[in-house]
Image (cartoon, rainbow, N blue to C red; front, top):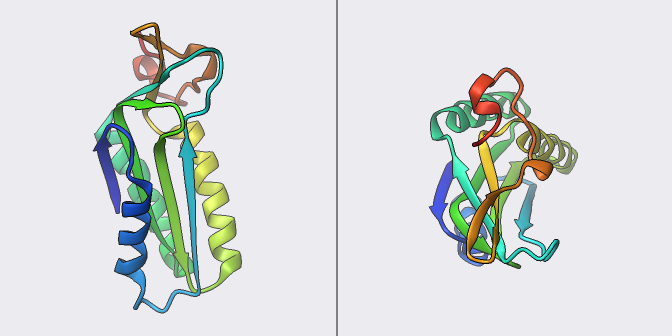
Length: 148
């Protein structure tokens, strides 16, 4: 399940909803990861652009990779502005075994940072400025590898 939300994520609502959805699925492990916007370099927050077709394809590939392990993935990400100390990213793995869940969430989050087609902008003095120094180019993306 991939969810895109406008603005900051409602962490308690999303995590509770996911837990309730899977509570009868006989998973032995539920491991969430919550990413929040840190106060650094004088920013007021971050803003995100998402290229949904590639993100959906990337996520679906991860779902297919997790399925043979008996694991299920869920992810939510923000579009638009997210202020300091708010959440822009939640990922979770449900699995029969904790080791599978621990290893999968680690690999999933790291690959997300390296491969997801999401562009980050700093919010500073009422402006939206591309955060080039904290962004990762997407391998093979050509023009999609960097924002203007």
